[in-house]
Image (cartoon, rainbow, N blue to C red):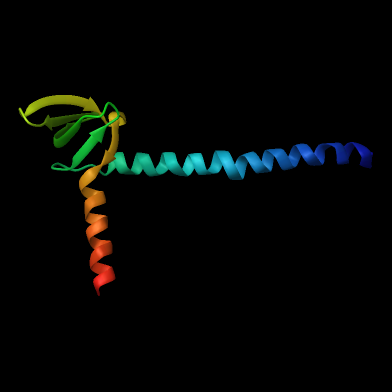
Length: 102
């Protein structure tokens, strides 16, 4: 009876390893990305997953209207196409610099 239990212990360790080192960090990263996309505001400068840099003009449900430079072209994308928000990172960097100077 105990021998059967000992054969499952390595399998249990593998599942625990996968959960803590693969599944859990991936879920945290997805929550972080979802929060970033849900907190978008008008005027935010973003980069899309296709590599386009633009400024958020307005929202309609899941659609975002972007203004692309230099010709002020307006395009619509979904929130899922947003890769990162640029102006928030710039604000964080300036806040870090200000905190270091204090």
